[in-house]
Length: 143
Image 1: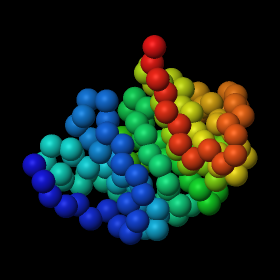
Image 2: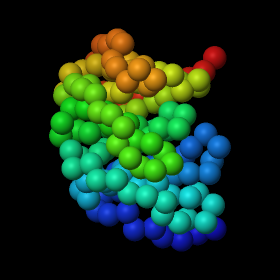
Image 3: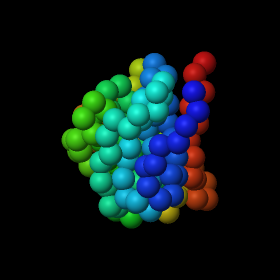
Image 4: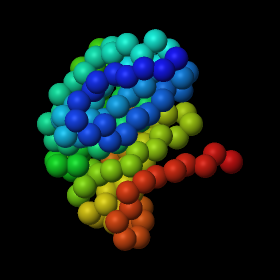
C-alpha cells in the first residue's frame, strides 16, 4: 500500500513497531508525535509535545520521544497517545535505541557528548556512557 498521512511540519523520524503494525512519527516543527497504522495508513492519534520531538522508538506498549528543546525523554501510551511521563536526559537528546527485551533505552545526548541509559519500566536514567563529540544516533547490535 502507498499513500500519504499528514502529521505536520518536519516529520523528523519514523519508527516501526516490533510487530510491524504501527508507525510512530516525530514531527519536530509541528511539535507532535503521531501514530499511524502501518497496514492501512490511518492516523490513530497525535499528541502535542511542544518541546521539539526529534526521534521516536517503541518500547513495549510505549512510544518514546526525545525532546530536544527541554533535554528530556517523553513516554507515550501507544494505544491512546496519552503522555505518561517525562524524564530529564541531557542537552539536546536525539537518537534512541531500545534493547531486544525493551527494558532499556539508549538516548544520545548531542550537547553532553554521551549516551544516557534509561530503564523504560521505572522511567529513570540508570547510567551514562561517554560517546565522543556530538553523538546523534544510537544503534544496538544483538549478538
